[in-house]
Image (spheres, one colour):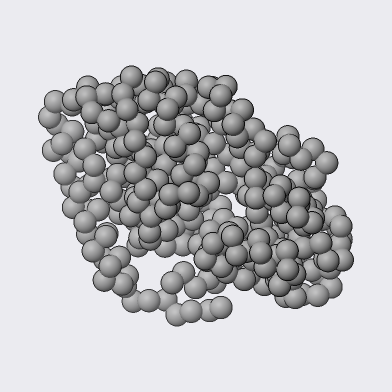
Length: 333
Protein backbone atom coordinates (compact mmCIF):
# COMPACT_ATOMS: atom_id res chain seq x y z
CA UNK A 1 0.00 0.00 0.00
CA UNK A 2 1.45 3.35 -1.03
CA UNK A 3 -1.15 6.05 -0.36
CA UNK A 4 -0.44 9.64 -1.25
CA UNK A 5 0.31 11.98 1.62
CA UNK A 6 -2.72 14.20 2.41
CA UNK A 7 -2.17 17.93 2.19
CA UNK A 8 -3.58 18.45 5.65
CA UNK A 9 -5.54 16.67 8.39
CA UNK A 10 -9.30 16.15 7.86
CA UNK A 11 -11.68 18.66 9.44
CA UNK A 12 -12.43 16.53 12.50
CA UNK A 13 -8.74 16.14 13.20
CA UNK A 14 -8.08 19.82 12.71
CA UNK A 15 -10.80 20.61 15.22
CA UNK A 16 -9.34 18.13 17.69
CA UNK A 17 -5.90 19.61 17.22
CA UNK A 18 -7.15 23.18 17.58
CA UNK A 19 -9.12 22.35 20.70
CA UNK A 20 -6.16 20.59 22.29
CA UNK A 21 -3.82 23.41 21.36
CA UNK A 22 -6.21 25.94 22.83
CA UNK A 23 -6.33 23.93 26.02
CA UNK A 24 -2.56 23.75 26.14
CA UNK A 25 -2.41 27.55 25.96
CA UNK A 26 -4.36 27.67 29.20
CA UNK A 27 -1.93 25.48 31.12
CA UNK A 28 0.36 28.27 32.17
CA UNK A 29 -2.42 30.45 33.52
CA UNK A 30 -4.01 27.53 35.33
CA UNK A 31 -0.71 26.51 36.82
CA UNK A 32 -0.20 30.01 38.16
CA UNK A 33 -3.15 29.82 40.55
CA UNK A 34 -3.44 27.91 43.80
CA UNK A 35 -3.80 24.17 43.22
CA UNK A 36 -6.55 22.26 45.06
CA UNK A 37 -5.12 19.46 47.19
CA UNK A 38 -4.98 16.03 45.57
CA UNK A 39 -8.11 14.19 46.64
CA UNK A 40 -10.29 17.28 46.73
CA UNK A 41 -12.47 15.54 44.15
CA UNK A 42 -12.47 12.14 42.40
CA UNK A 43 -9.52 11.27 40.19
CA UNK A 44 -10.51 10.43 36.61
CA UNK A 45 -8.61 7.78 34.65
CA UNK A 46 -9.19 8.40 30.93
CA UNK A 47 -9.03 5.12 29.01
CA UNK A 48 -8.69 5.47 25.21
CA UNK A 49 -10.86 2.42 24.49
CA UNK A 50 -14.48 1.37 24.88
CA UNK A 51 -15.54 -0.59 27.98
CA UNK A 52 -14.80 -4.30 28.08
CA UNK A 53 -11.37 -4.36 26.45
CA UNK A 54 -8.17 -5.53 28.09
CA UNK A 55 -6.98 -2.03 29.05
CA UNK A 56 -10.40 -1.12 30.45
CA UNK A 57 -10.53 -4.30 32.54
CA UNK A 58 -7.07 -3.66 34.00
CA UNK A 59 -7.89 0.01 34.66
CA UNK A 60 -11.07 -0.88 36.54
CA UNK A 61 -9.27 -3.51 38.59
CA UNK A 62 -6.54 -0.99 39.42
CA UNK A 63 -9.01 1.72 40.42
CA UNK A 64 -9.83 0.19 43.80
CA UNK A 65 -6.29 -0.18 45.21
CA UNK A 66 -5.28 3.13 43.58
CA UNK A 67 -8.22 4.81 45.29
CA UNK A 68 -7.24 3.28 48.64
CA UNK A 69 -3.66 4.51 48.24
CA UNK A 70 -4.78 8.03 47.31
CA UNK A 71 -7.57 8.27 49.85
CA UNK A 72 -9.84 9.52 47.06
CA UNK A 73 -12.24 7.87 44.59
CA UNK A 74 -10.69 6.85 41.26
CA UNK A 75 -13.16 6.64 38.37
CA UNK A 76 -12.59 5.16 34.91
CA UNK A 77 -13.76 7.33 32.01
CA UNK A 78 -13.78 5.63 28.59
CA UNK A 79 -12.90 8.05 25.78
CA UNK A 80 -12.29 5.97 22.63
CA UNK A 81 -11.50 7.25 19.16
CA UNK A 82 -8.82 8.72 16.88
CA UNK A 83 -6.18 6.16 17.89
CA UNK A 84 -6.26 7.41 21.48
CA UNK A 85 -5.89 11.08 20.52
CA UNK A 86 -9.31 12.03 21.91
CA UNK A 87 -8.48 10.77 25.38
CA UNK A 88 -4.93 12.16 25.26
CA UNK A 89 -6.08 15.62 24.13
CA UNK A 90 -8.82 15.76 26.76
CA UNK A 91 -6.28 15.14 29.50
CA UNK A 92 -3.87 17.66 28.00
CA UNK A 93 -6.65 20.27 28.29
CA UNK A 94 -7.58 19.31 31.84
CA UNK A 95 -6.75 21.26 34.99
CA UNK A 96 -3.16 20.25 35.87
CA UNK A 97 -3.96 19.37 39.47
CA UNK A 98 -3.63 15.58 39.38
CA UNK A 99 -7.35 14.84 39.15
CA UNK A 100 -7.47 13.92 35.43
CA UNK A 101 -5.11 11.21 34.22
CA UNK A 102 -4.52 9.33 30.97
CA UNK A 103 -3.74 5.63 30.56
CA UNK A 104 -1.38 5.40 27.61
CA UNK A 105 -0.75 2.35 25.42
CA UNK A 106 1.67 1.64 22.56
CA UNK A 107 -0.79 3.59 20.42
CA UNK A 108 0.43 6.78 22.08
CA UNK A 109 3.93 6.34 20.69
CA UNK A 110 2.73 4.83 17.40
CA UNK A 111 0.49 7.83 16.74
CA UNK A 112 3.35 10.20 17.52
CA UNK A 113 5.46 8.45 14.88
CA UNK A 114 2.89 7.82 12.14
CA UNK A 115 0.07 10.33 12.75
CA UNK A 116 1.45 13.33 14.66
CA UNK A 117 -1.42 15.49 13.37
CA UNK A 118 -3.78 13.59 15.68
CA UNK A 119 -2.05 14.89 18.78
CA UNK A 120 -1.51 18.41 20.09
CA UNK A 121 2.19 18.06 19.45
CA UNK A 122 4.73 15.62 20.85
CA UNK A 123 3.10 13.72 23.77
CA UNK A 124 6.28 14.24 25.76
CA UNK A 125 5.50 17.96 25.66
CA UNK A 126 1.84 17.88 26.70
CA UNK A 127 1.80 14.89 29.07
CA UNK A 128 3.80 14.34 32.26
CA UNK A 129 4.68 10.73 33.22
CA UNK A 130 3.38 9.38 36.51
CA UNK A 131 4.50 5.79 36.22
CA UNK A 132 4.41 2.50 34.42
CA UNK A 133 1.38 0.30 35.02
CA UNK A 134 1.47 -3.07 33.27
CA UNK A 135 3.14 -4.97 30.45
CA UNK A 136 2.16 -8.03 28.45
CA UNK A 137 4.00 -9.58 25.51
CA UNK A 138 2.48 -10.53 22.19
CA UNK A 139 2.75 -14.11 21.00
CA UNK A 140 3.21 -15.17 17.37
CA UNK A 141 0.24 -17.52 17.15
CA UNK A 142 -0.51 -19.63 14.07
CA UNK A 143 -3.33 -21.87 12.96
CA UNK A 144 -2.96 -25.55 13.81
CA UNK A 145 -2.71 -26.44 10.12
CA UNK A 146 0.34 -24.22 9.54
CA UNK A 147 3.20 -26.52 8.46
CA UNK A 148 5.79 -25.13 10.89
CA UNK A 149 5.82 -25.95 14.60
CA UNK A 150 8.54 -23.53 15.70
CA UNK A 151 9.91 -20.08 14.89
CA UNK A 152 12.75 -21.43 12.75
CA UNK A 153 10.25 -23.26 10.59
CA UNK A 154 8.07 -20.15 10.37
CA UNK A 155 11.06 -18.06 9.26
CA UNK A 156 12.02 -20.58 6.59
CA UNK A 157 8.44 -20.82 5.29
CA UNK A 158 7.95 -17.06 5.03
CA UNK A 159 11.26 -16.61 3.24
CA UNK A 160 10.49 -19.39 0.75
CA UNK A 161 6.97 -18.04 0.14
CA UNK A 162 7.52 -14.31 0.20
CA UNK A 163 4.28 -12.40 0.82
CA UNK A 164 2.13 -15.51 1.21
CA UNK A 165 1.94 -15.53 5.02
CA UNK A 166 -1.28 -13.77 6.07
CA UNK A 167 -0.81 -12.08 9.44
CA UNK A 168 -4.02 -10.73 10.93
CA UNK A 169 -3.96 -7.59 13.05
CA UNK A 170 -6.46 -5.50 14.98
CA UNK A 171 -5.97 -2.28 13.04
CA UNK A 172 -3.59 -0.37 10.80
CA UNK A 173 -2.00 1.75 13.53
CA UNK A 174 -1.57 -0.94 16.17
CA UNK A 175 1.43 -2.69 17.64
CA UNK A 176 0.13 -6.00 16.28
CA UNK A 177 0.30 -4.58 12.74
CA UNK A 178 3.67 -2.90 13.17
CA UNK A 179 5.17 -5.97 14.85
CA UNK A 180 4.45 -7.87 11.64
CA UNK A 181 6.08 -5.15 9.53
CA UNK A 182 9.14 -5.15 11.78
CA UNK A 183 9.35 -8.95 11.74
CA UNK A 184 9.25 -9.04 7.94
CA UNK A 185 12.01 -6.45 7.73
CA UNK A 186 14.21 -8.27 10.23
CA UNK A 187 13.71 -11.62 8.45
CA UNK A 188 14.31 -10.08 5.04
CA UNK A 189 10.97 -11.19 3.66
CA UNK A 190 7.41 -9.93 3.23
CA UNK A 191 4.51 -10.75 5.54
CA UNK A 192 1.08 -9.72 4.28
CA UNK A 193 -1.03 -7.83 6.85
CA UNK A 194 -4.75 -8.52 7.10
CA UNK A 195 -6.47 -5.77 9.14
CA UNK A 196 -9.53 -6.44 11.29
CA UNK A 197 -11.60 -4.15 13.48
CA UNK A 198 -11.51 -6.31 16.59
CA UNK A 199 -9.74 -9.25 18.21
CA UNK A 200 -12.82 -11.51 18.41
CA UNK A 201 -13.18 -11.96 14.65
CA UNK A 202 -9.41 -12.39 14.29
CA UNK A 203 -9.46 -15.37 16.62
CA UNK A 204 -12.37 -16.94 14.79
CA UNK A 205 -10.69 -16.59 11.39
CA UNK A 206 -7.36 -17.86 12.73
CA UNK A 207 -8.95 -21.02 14.11
CA UNK A 208 -10.81 -21.50 10.82
CA UNK A 209 -7.57 -21.19 8.86
CA UNK A 210 -8.62 -18.07 6.92
CA UNK A 211 -5.38 -16.39 8.02
CA UNK A 212 -2.11 -18.00 8.97
CA UNK A 213 -1.31 -16.14 12.17
CA UNK A 214 -1.55 -13.18 14.48
CA UNK A 215 0.47 -11.41 17.12
CA UNK A 216 -1.96 -12.02 19.99
CA UNK A 217 -1.71 -10.58 23.46
CA UNK A 218 -0.51 -13.31 25.75
CA UNK A 219 -3.87 -13.75 27.47
CA UNK A 220 -5.61 -14.15 24.09
CA UNK A 221 -2.86 -16.47 22.84
CA UNK A 222 -3.42 -18.79 25.80
CA UNK A 223 -7.11 -19.03 24.93
CA UNK A 224 -6.33 -19.70 21.26
CA UNK A 225 -3.86 -22.42 22.21
CA UNK A 226 -6.61 -24.11 24.17
CA UNK A 227 -8.59 -24.25 20.93
CA UNK A 228 -5.81 -25.76 18.87
CA UNK A 229 -3.63 -22.86 17.73
CA UNK A 230 0.16 -23.10 17.98
CA UNK A 231 2.33 -20.60 19.87
CA UNK A 232 5.67 -20.12 18.10
CA UNK A 233 7.41 -17.21 19.87
CA UNK A 234 6.89 -14.25 22.16
CA UNK A 235 7.63 -10.75 20.92
CA UNK A 236 9.18 -9.34 24.09
CA UNK A 237 12.90 -9.33 24.73
CA UNK A 238 12.63 -12.20 27.20
CA UNK A 239 10.44 -15.26 27.48
CA UNK A 240 7.14 -14.99 29.33
CA UNK A 241 7.05 -16.57 32.78
CA UNK A 242 3.75 -18.35 32.01
CA UNK A 243 5.17 -19.70 28.72
CA UNK A 244 8.69 -20.80 29.66
CA UNK A 245 8.93 -23.26 26.76
CA UNK A 246 8.01 -20.69 24.09
CA UNK A 247 11.14 -18.86 22.89
CA UNK A 248 11.46 -15.13 22.39
CA UNK A 249 11.89 -13.86 18.84
CA UNK A 250 14.95 -12.00 20.14
CA UNK A 251 16.70 -15.35 20.57
CA UNK A 252 16.80 -15.50 16.76
CA UNK A 253 16.60 -11.78 15.95
CA UNK A 254 18.59 -9.98 18.67
CA UNK A 255 16.94 -6.85 20.01
CA UNK A 256 13.44 -7.63 18.72
CA UNK A 257 11.22 -6.24 21.48
CA UNK A 258 7.56 -5.37 20.90
CA UNK A 259 5.07 -5.63 23.74
CA UNK A 260 1.84 -4.22 25.09
CA UNK A 261 2.37 -1.64 27.83
CA UNK A 262 0.32 0.81 29.85
CA UNK A 263 1.45 3.92 31.67
CA UNK A 264 -0.30 6.70 33.53
CA UNK A 265 0.18 10.35 32.53
CA UNK A 266 -1.08 13.72 33.79
CA UNK A 267 -1.28 17.13 32.06
CA UNK A 268 2.18 18.57 31.41
CA UNK A 269 1.87 21.50 33.84
CA UNK A 270 1.01 19.30 36.84
CA UNK A 271 3.33 20.29 39.74
CA UNK A 272 6.13 17.83 40.48
CA UNK A 273 5.02 17.26 44.12
CA UNK A 274 1.61 16.16 42.82
CA UNK A 275 3.21 13.87 40.25
CA UNK A 276 5.38 12.34 42.97
CA UNK A 277 2.34 11.81 45.19
CA UNK A 278 0.50 10.11 42.34
CA UNK A 279 3.53 7.95 41.55
CA UNK A 280 3.79 6.78 45.15
CA UNK A 281 0.08 5.90 45.25
CA UNK A 282 0.23 4.12 41.89
CA UNK A 283 3.25 2.09 42.97
CA UNK A 284 1.50 1.07 46.16
CA UNK A 285 -1.58 0.00 44.19
CA UNK A 286 0.51 -2.05 41.77
CA UNK A 287 2.00 -4.11 44.61
CA UNK A 288 -1.49 -5.15 45.74
CA UNK A 289 -1.31 -8.94 45.78
CA UNK A 290 -5.00 -9.42 45.02
CA UNK A 291 -4.60 -7.33 41.86
CA UNK A 292 -1.43 -9.12 40.81
CA UNK A 293 -2.89 -12.58 41.40
CA UNK A 294 -6.01 -11.76 39.39
CA UNK A 295 -3.95 -11.16 36.23
CA UNK A 296 -1.00 -13.46 36.83
CA UNK A 297 -2.35 -16.34 34.73
CA UNK A 298 -2.93 -13.91 31.84
CA UNK A 299 0.74 -12.99 31.75
CA UNK A 300 0.12 -9.39 32.82
CA UNK A 301 3.07 -8.02 34.75
CA UNK A 302 2.53 -4.97 36.96
CA UNK A 303 5.62 -2.80 37.00
CA UNK A 304 5.85 -0.18 39.75
CA UNK A 305 8.77 2.19 39.43
CA UNK A 306 9.92 5.79 39.12
CA UNK A 307 8.33 8.32 36.80
CA UNK A 308 11.48 8.41 34.68
CA UNK A 309 11.03 4.75 33.71
CA UNK A 310 7.81 5.63 31.88
CA UNK A 311 9.45 8.62 30.21
CA UNK A 312 12.20 6.31 28.93
CA UNK A 313 9.65 3.87 27.48
CA UNK A 314 7.98 6.68 25.55
CA UNK A 315 11.34 7.94 24.26
CA UNK A 316 12.37 4.46 23.12
CA UNK A 317 9.06 3.65 21.48
CA UNK A 318 8.73 6.92 19.58
CA UNK A 319 12.29 6.55 18.32
CA UNK A 320 11.73 2.95 17.22
CA UNK A 321 8.40 3.51 15.51
CA UNK A 322 9.66 6.67 13.82
CA UNK A 323 12.55 4.69 12.36
CA UNK A 324 10.11 2.03 11.13
CA UNK A 325 7.88 4.71 9.60
CA UNK A 326 10.73 5.66 7.26
CA UNK A 327 10.97 2.09 5.97
CA UNK A 328 7.34 1.08 5.46
CA UNK A 329 4.37 2.77 3.83
CA UNK A 330 1.09 2.31 5.68
CA UNK A 331 -2.34 3.71 4.86
CA UNK A 332 -3.09 5.47 8.16
CA UNK A 333 -6.66 6.44 7.21
